Amino acid sequence: MSDSGRPAASPGTYAWYVLGLLTCVNTINFIDRNIVFALFEPIKQELELSDTQLGWLGSAYIVVFSLTAVPLGILSDLKSRRAVMAAGVTLWSAFTGLGGLARQYWQLLVCRSMVGVGEAAYSPAAQSLLADYFPPARRAFALGVFWSGLAVGGVAGIWLGGELESLYGWRAAFLAVGLPGLVLATLTAVLRDPVRGEGRFSLGRAVLRFELTVWRVARAAWPLWTFGGLGLLAAYAVDRAGLGDAELESALFGAGLVVGVAGTVARAVRQVLRMRHADAGAPASVTLSTLDEFLHAARFVLRTPTLIWTFLGGALISFAMNGLVGWSPTYLQRVLGLPPEIAGRTIGLSGLTAGVLGVLFGGRLGDRLMERRPTGRVLAGAAGFLIGGPLCVWLLLVRDLDLFIPLFFSTIFFFTWYHGPVAATIFDVVPAGIGASVVGTYVFFTHIAGDAVAYPLIGFLSDRVGLEWAMLLLPAVGMLGGLV
Image (cartoon, rainbow, N blue to C red):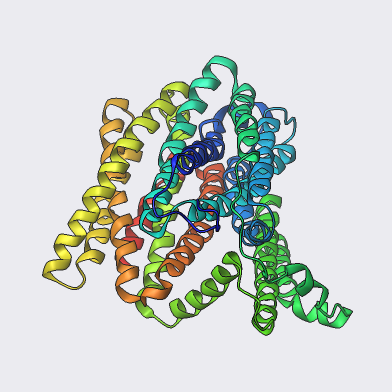
């Protein structure tokens, strides 16, 4: 980093140290996120939970992370990034550990939700910091290294969770993976935060300029009243018709509130953006510019049929892929009778190897097919799910571990063909200036409409027909996503 605050032409030793540290922290991030999936079965037995409740433990992180990433990103853009990162790491690590002390379901649900808040604070600030330490020519590589923590940490979380649970119990597993983050938070807190330009748009001044009359607040929050009311009406209708239980009614009302809060936050952000543009001569902050691009990208998606179908297909595929990975450790323990450590080891090793090979092969296949026909990349991703779907059905019907392992490997291998071609397809049809924003919008949508729905829905069905039958929904949805 140069004295002027701009990235040096070539990153120095300290920049590589920052990248290494933040990548380690990001790996811990995904370990703490995914460990809960390896612990579903012992948690269910001790706390006497339903599978629906277990599913919400998996989705709580995703929903809260998605709703808080934008405001916390703004905070990290306006305040010290190292302080926001250190606070985020401390928060998620502390609540990961506190999850091991939970005695009731709601306590554990709150802990998992707060993990989402902490990690939402960390990710935008860390990427912003790396963008300042690395010049544009090295920036993509640096962020690629940073996001390698997703693959390594995601698999390691399931693996470590199973191993630690078998040795010390699920409570100790949460405590053990929470401690390293507290140590890394201290190192994050003393990183050098490059000086940013003066004259930034002030979020505080913008907030003070809102006219907070009762009528204006009520009108501005119409998404909250509308969707919250629809959720309440849906819950009431289900109750009156006798179609569900208290869990389903709570889920419907909660879903309405979540959508309402998200819509209200989006309206507030849009107003802030308008104020920013009204401040003549005030340079746009990185995060607020990203928000502006996000809104522009969302409008572009809604005007492009190819992208609409890509987003819908991606949500269905995320539902199938992440639902399978999230519930597979429990499936192995409950249906095949494996101990947690063997289940975690099986999913971890097979998932990591097959996932890496599948992503590489799918991307290469998509490029080759693209040379022959314009829809080549789309066909490559679709083929993966149309081949992997029947294998997944077979996988969920076998009761032999020796057959389960190669079938799981093959299913993940084919399912992950989709990742490279879908990103390339998006860049094929969008203007260069908003490509990254559209991809970000795609990731946000597919998580909220995909795996955040998959975990509790599979749990809800499992409570009624059994996990082995409930999971058969996953390949059906995946094949539908491939067709879309």
